Length: 192
Image 1 (cartoon, rainbow, N blue to C red):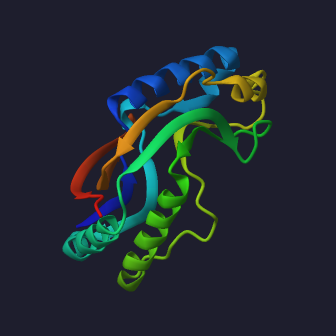
Image 2 (tube, rainbow, N blue to C red):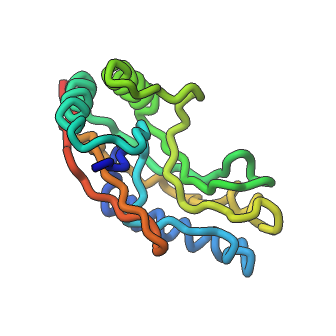
């Protein structure tokens, strides 16, 4: 059986609450156009480090070993939610996200280590530079989200919400018409 897998960091409960508030700000700014956005459930938000795709279940032990080795070589990370943005741009928003600040250089090093450990197993690292973010929603149509560009520029003002990432999680994604549900299959502590 194939499992849809990805490797991620799991934000704290405080961060989940902060993201729910940020989504509320963006929904209000978008007005009726907010219905064009498929919002991610705040408790399901995670910081993806590497997407693995559909993988045969019997490959789990090797993947867990690779994730564990990469995690062991990195210290816990101090991260924060600091503002919001969109890919490819605020004016043509397709993916709405919360910015991640803090230990972003060590985070990028962790992503590179994961890529090195997973490459011998046939997983190709992302070619684009790593952009640390937490996905808040996906727009069905990049046009017609008036007010969103300005809202993104001012969203999440005030103090940063911080969290300590102490483990890397291998998740299985269960897709359904009601949205994705994520199941943690393996947790590897960050530790040096």
